[in-house]
Length: 162
Image (cartoon, rainbow, N blue to C red; front, side, top):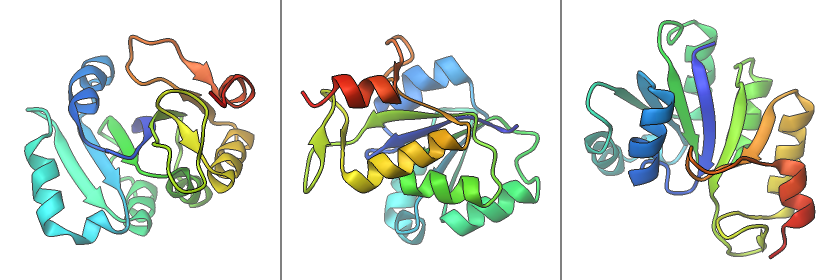
């Protein structure tokens, strides 16, 4: 399985993902899966500049990610997938992509989102998508840095709301 971890983080590529998570996961490739960003060359070039030395970076849309994983394009890689919303990962899973775990990194309070921790706020659709991901047998938890303890989705939802 080429994917070592999938992370939902609105900021996608930033200091925590390219430093702390890089040391913990040692991925060969960072993969940003986002339908809008994949069409924006300026944002893509900025993201590529921030990737750790010795790693590759793909910034692609959801359908391309599904097609590439299913074709075995990344079978020889270790891939750290970054997305902005759980829906993207749910589409990938339903498209046949194997994802071992989903980490909730930073999802900020806005619109209809309710805070569940200092870094995680979710709306009803995001909660439903995460619950569906979990029902597909994928571990879902919040862990901002690798040094922090994992908070399982059920615990986040029942003890959250801070």
